[in-house]
Image (cartoon, helix red, strand yellow):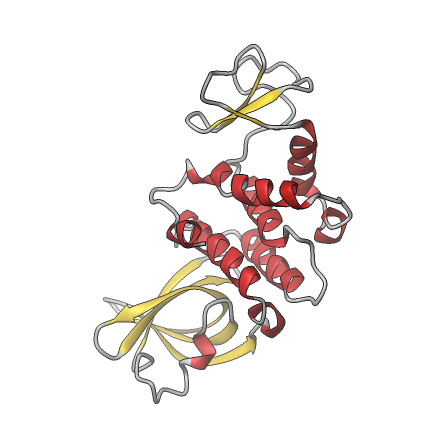
Length: 239
């Protein structure tokens, strides 16, 4: 069976001697793992079309063993995003989270729209300093795996000024429930994280952070999701 597909490339790896295995998040929110015959060859004309982060359209042939991406055309390469080394590494973390948290049988168009919106935002010349991390927060919220930043994860009381993040339980705890190894989570961070869940990228960009606050949130946000993933984030360790 042959079908048309549109999607964003979230992963690529070698498959045999001359082929590539490409993972797409389709516009229907479906994770597709597709073999691209001959794309591992340096002479392949299709190789540039299936770069990581590219939005592509093409045709897929489903065989009993594998699905094959046959014709392919890049619709959007997010060129300006790829000119910023730091942004690219931040997106790598997002793509790895997406690759680990999507399954072929759990299609959700909202997830594709969210990824496309994140890449579109980061493709602008002037973007939020936490653009990729805001995308991660929105992704975690869409999957229902983010904790509340308003109430304690143990006693469920409203959080006052003092609160701490528990890496083991993946919850925010109040002063009464916190444990010695928990990390302090200031009120400004909690308000920002809660705001990131539902606000637009433009609205999120209106929040002003100090340089040390940006660094801290950039370090913290991937850990909000890491406990729900099967494998460590290699891109996060490299970054």
